[in-house]
Image 1: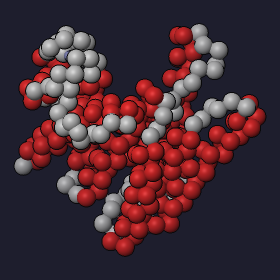
Image 2: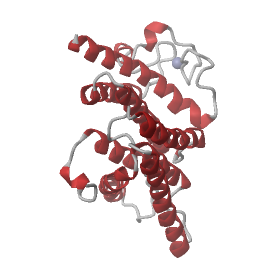
Image 3: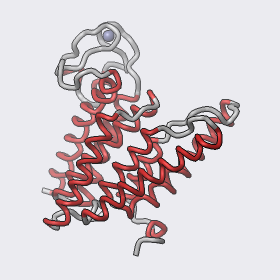
Image 4: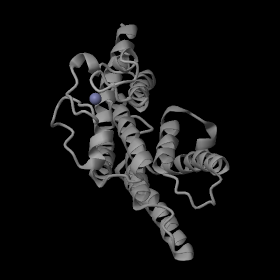
Amino acid sequence: MEHIALITAALLGLCIGSFLNVCIYRVPLKKSVCKPARSYCPKCNTTLSALDNIPVFSWLLLGAKCRYCKERISGEYPLVELLTGGAAVASYLHFGITLTAVLIFLFTATLIVISFIDFHHKIIPNVISFPGMVIGLCLGIFSQFTGLLQSPLTQSALDSLLGFLIGAGLFYSIAYGYYFFTKRHGMGMGDVKLMGVIGAVLGWQSIYPTVIVGSCAGGVFGLLIMLLAGGNGKSEIPYGPWLSLGAIIYIFFDIPFFRLVVV
Ligand SMILES: [Zn+2]
């Protein structure tokens, strides 16, 4: 039984990952994620058959090329599918077959979409972050009155509201301060809204671990890029993927360091 649940979670995760690829490609272009329902090759526009659309396997079988025009298909497609499959398995293993597992998985899937869009376009679309903030705040109320949600999801309306205010407020201050002193935009409003979403969904307790882990990972990555590309320190690094990574590590790893300020 346990194995069946695990395999179901993995397969479901892979298929949803395939849909996330559609979102990552279409949302920044302001195209519908539902119509057309079937994926198509961005080069030759041929609608892909179901056989060409199986997560990860189709990519491997076709040798990372479009069947029709032989255009190279990026390894990002199977990567997103594998990450989403991994998120589904991790959610099941951590939280069992519960509402918390489903919500954590959906939240992680949203962070995957935000990360890849931010990485490519250096934006975090409002069409994702605004509903994310509202849903997060509603989760706080739901959690408080039903007691149905497990930690690390927000446990009360106040936790959620404080998470939203501290997360967005902190990043707004940093963005404003940076602009005030340098007259350059270092941090986008997208990151401010993303921290609002993370704080609302996971509560104020998540802000400190997310920011610390996100800043360290993003800082190391930025330094590597600067060393490799010989940049002048002005190269723009998307921050969304690193904040998302910080939130995901906070969710799935119980590191004592995270509890320094959380009693
Ligand atoms: Zn093609």
